[in-house]
Length: 123
Image (cartoon, rainbow, N blue to C red):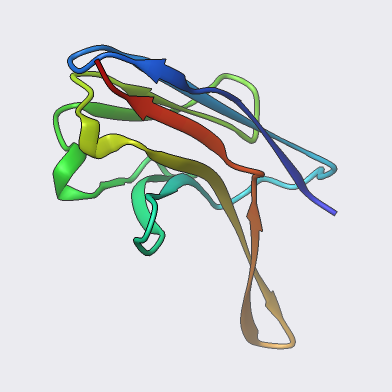
């Protein structure tokens, strides 16, 4: 079973920066996609940023130019550098990972989640 351990987050002032990190354990295989979702109170969980094993990135429009996702030197680690933070970025941030396999000719996806890290942007 894959476990995702998150670190970072916390409280920042508007315009400040925070960094989230996530490390996967319990697996010897590479994860195909790693990323971050967030959920603000009363809102649905949304994708913030993702990064494939091939290096392709996706960002939600509201964080483009402010957030940067990266994978560390170690396998199965991902970080999210958040800059120019806004109160609207306040949410619980979840690390997400996807493993894609083909079983008997059928493509399957296994998805894993971290426990969530609170990010609060307030003066």
